[in-house]
Length: 329
Image 1 (tube, rainbow, N blue to C red):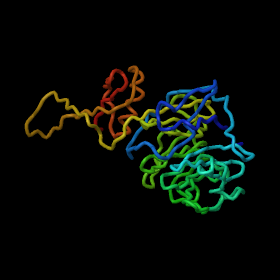
Image 2: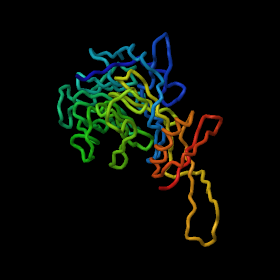
Image 3: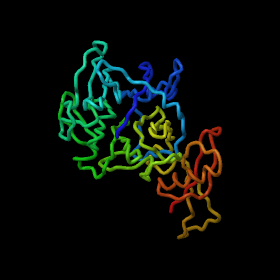
């Protein structure tokens, strides 16, 4: 049985201010991270990587959540505010996405996606969940029970399938519930029942988080995640639904270059030698607190850059950033 829950939203907050990701107000949890705004997404390299181990920023207290009220008989599963300050609301059981016009204080509502009946055609949705509107006002919908991501052009009720059932992308989704776009319109998907976060770049799917495909409670696992967002630094926040927690995954690298900090370690130099000395590349790895932590993080960081770990690491910037020493395989 598909389940969902809603959140208290403070409309004065903005997602992409890292200070406002999570706040408390009137003794209730305010999760501004679910009120997405499209006019300031982070710019992320196609080669960007994130720490595969998450840090829990909220747990257990997520059991106390409240509905997002609208003037319909059903609560929103997801909200979005576009560049014109119009708000969008996905209604799972009504199988539609509604838009509220900012020019009349949100009292005027129109249906911009779905017919009200569940189905697999280009005009229909089946339990729509996550929504995102880009700068060109294209509406992206996580059509969860159809296992696909739909894109509705402005004013159009016929959608194009971007990923999933009926698309040309070779990937099978299992109840996608969340979507996000970065500054270059690269698509990020919460593949809920595969317990993972994936990314679409140039018709290629890359798994970012939870790539074992198995649910779990450890820092590297998710259990039916529902939504994800970024802060202004590109760090990823995931609503790990069945684990009752919000997980933060730190951005590790945001460039396709191997490194900007190279050092050459040579025990000897032979002029015109055919032997190449090893080049050790130091790659940013986020905060590392101990050698045991480094033994978990550094092999992943090096592998993601096509290299292997030398066992070397060190902390820089007053303990706020660490680097792993990697070497070409």
